[in-house]
Amino acid sequence: MKFPVRNFLVLLFFIVSSCSGPYYLKETHTSQTRIKQDSLKAVDSVIVKMIAPFKQKLDAQMNEVIAVNDVDLSKERPEGSLCNMAADAVLAYANKTYERPVDFCVLNYGGLRIPSISKGNITLGKIYELMPFDNQLEVVEIDGKTCKQLLDVVAKSGGWPVSGVRMNILQSLADSITFKGQLLDPNKTYTLVTSDYIVNGGDNITMLQNGKKRTPLNYKVRDAIIDYLRELKNNNQTVNTKKDGRITITQP
Amino acid sequence: MEELQLLNRRGFIKTTASTVALAALANSPLRLLAKDEAIRITILHTNDWHSRIEPFASDDKQFAGLGGAAARSALIKKIRSEEKNVLLLDAGDIFQGTPYFNFFEGELEYKIMSEMGYDLATLGNHDFDNGIEGIINQMRYAKFEFVNANYDFSNTLLSDKVKPYKVINKNGVKIGVFGVGIELKGLVPDELYGNIKYNDPIEAANRISAELKTKHKCDLVICLSHLGYKYANDKVSDITLAQKTQNIDLIIGGHTHTFLPAPVKQKNLLGKEVLINQVGWAGINLGRIDYTFEPLKNKVSQPVASVLEIGERNI
Image (cartoon, rainbow over all chains, first blue to last red; front, side, top):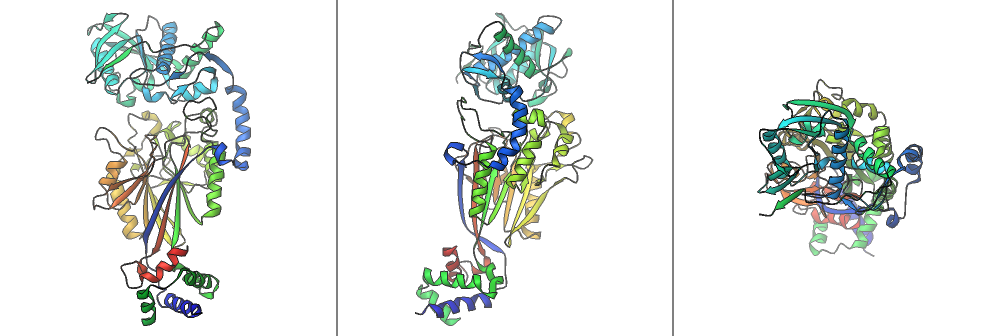
């Protein structure tokens, strides 16, 4: 029964020394929680209500199935099937609209924003997730030397989505570059389609701004991909883009 | 006092005794003295949630069913019901990634974060995807504030809307939070970030964190960084930021979408440990760091320390 005495002593102490000073950090504990509705078994109904009207508007448009996917498309380096599909789509669009054949397409790896598209239906919303940016397409005419500089950046970063060109990455540089089986000619002029983001120096691509001729196509990268997929569906074809060795890498 | 010290030396202050003591304290007119209790500060954080309002679709190969604002909010509200001193922070790239941003331009993202009770966020490169005006137009929906210390916003519309830092007082514990952002040139089209000037984040971090520690007497200094966790080249990252500064306790990072399994410790210029954390992207994980603070005067090395430990054990 000594407790009261002790309590008194403790209280007394607090009174005596109650002038507050700065704090010191006694202990740190860290953790993280995976947000998974199934396991957390809880959703905030206030948020659900906030989302509802927005979701309703989007779903009406975004749930449209624009193509059927026969393979699992994935974003990979040096080459990925998802990367190939996107670059093929852009090159196809450019070849339909530009005044002369377009040799190749380069897109930045970071521009594809989801790691994969699963086998099955591809919705319009999925392509917005893949390519959420409103970047527009642009065709640039460049000489072979500039092509090499550009593809060296692609090689250095480990591989980007490309179409119309094949290359090997050797010691972080682009090697054995070919277009339709022909080796790159440093003095020849090539036509490249990419996004305005890249032409303007995005991702530190500095060599395209002084291209011989720049032609904005006034069309979004995303819309080119959407068109490509819709067309496959309209022709009763499925998406089955595979890796075809367009970028290989010689391991050091 | 002599008897008290005797008590301490013998180490026989028992848990029960201290509980009673603290309970008595809580109910007594001496409540003012509650400052002498240990205080737990709970930091919750996200980064790069990129307009991921809904969970990933069930057919997603990596993230099926993960994320979602409604589940995140439920978790945050649950933690708030358990913890008194919660600080909710975001390290940037709130915008861009789903049609919600393409069609509604960030309105819902800011509204949701306001409902969750976010305190502060910093700006990531993708927050500029609709330009400076794109941020300002949505700020009316944000009940939280933005911090950045290394972008010079003068001559832009953001000049009075983004502060270098903010000091938050939680139950007497002063927490200084500032932000640093990545170089926008080459990452964001020039016309979207306009006249914003990029300054060295390390210089800004050292200057601001010193101000927070010395002038504002912050007990905890947190940096919300959108620099990126780590790079193979010498580009400034959270790792270099930690190494080259001296008053930061915690760096909450973003940009590289790095899923750190646990916060990483890095020694600063003075050899003191800085905690760096980043929780991937898309609102898949919620980071949590609990700091327990005690009044400095009761630190173990000081004569009165053991009395304070009573409180620590029981809170």
